[in-house]
Length: 130
Image (cartoon, rainbow, N blue to C red; front, side, top):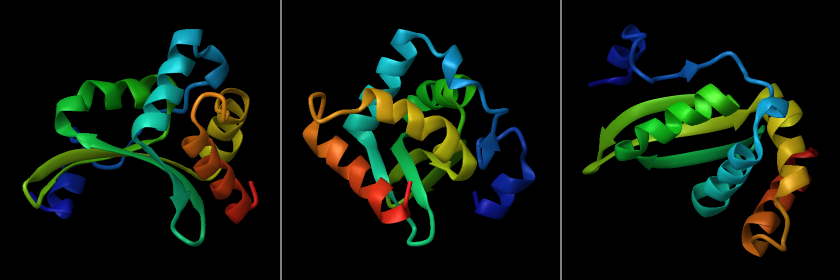
């Protein structure tokens, strides 16, 4: 299936963007789960122009991606199928990243939890002036 075909099918996840939930509504479990999944599987970086936090995982984890968009926000892309892999990609960029995810990660992601992830997050913030 091509990207064009996915765009023509609104029921597919391609570019699915839910109304952004308020992070203050996230419970302790939600915050811990979010930080844990981003520490373990996420990427803190950007495209050279804007910062982004990306999570890419196999389509077997669709329920997790639905939870992310429903409970946390962000934007979901996929499913993609190429190179023998099938995956979804969740992204946090723009206003959502700056006003919702960064404050949450500033409060809960530290070197005491995971030094490498905390360093990558800090480097992203420094590079993009967050």
